[in-house]
Image 1 (cartoon, helix red, strand yellow):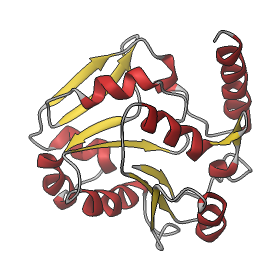
Image 2: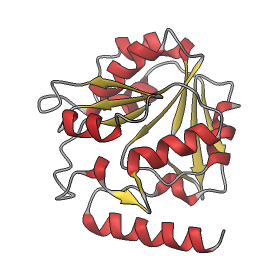
Image 3: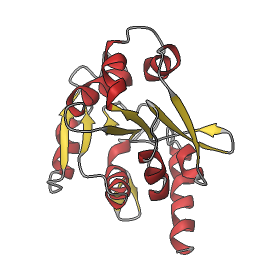
Image 4: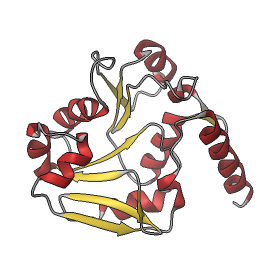
Length: 195
């Protein structure tokens, strides 16, 4: 699941349609998921939903759900929309916000092997995305009404959490601002040259 309902207010541009190389950010995430063997990929849209969905519509292997209340609610509400849909079709759900697109295929594979309720990747003692959620934990998360969003749910519910060490600094690359995005593009260009 990729959450992409937000307003991109700090970026000054619409994050989901920005590119890394020739691919949009959601395409890049989708390709990494696919390369790791993930079949069902969901994009939760909100802000500029029609524009984003139309730009990605040629990908018949993406499912779109909308958070029509994105202006009034939090990212956790988008997560709940996606979890509610996916709990009936998956054993495990990988989740990332659209602004963390640079994780690698090996990280996804390591997360899929996780047997805990929640698997969180860790690089140099810092946690990042994507995370993996067992379908067994979904109803508890959906029923969580405390503060702190998904992080609050993970912290406050009695869920088994496994931190998975990965050799992948990409799990930490968040792009909230233009500077973040430009740094991510530089990292992407460097990684492509080293292939």
